[in-house]
Image 1: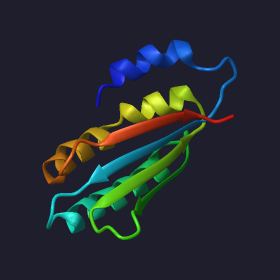
Image 2: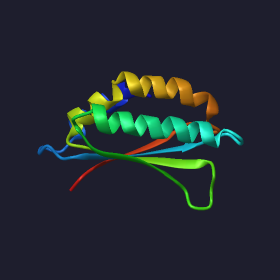
Image 3: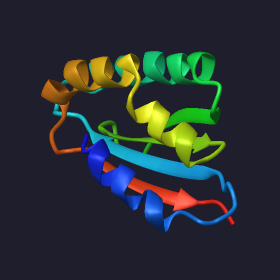
Image 4: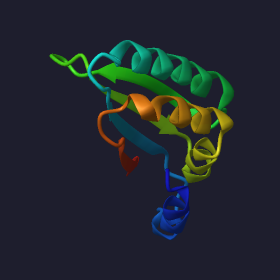
Length: 113
């Protein structure tokens, strides 16, 4: 992940301490769905239990697809979101999961209104 780019976006954050919502999409290679699902489930548990700035974090699978996943997270503010990107468990997940992905992950980041 290119967290440096996200840090640069800090100037665009709203003046109030708005929550940050994120959607991360991943597509598993054929035959690797179970491994990706297992990694994502374990990771979501870690995020929910280890990151005080995370209000919620859950993983879903696209209806009608065995290989398309999305993680949905809500962080209390921009600082909590940036801290999330610097955790050891995120770096470990990316190292373990990337070889099992058919495409690069995509990330959508939103400020809560």
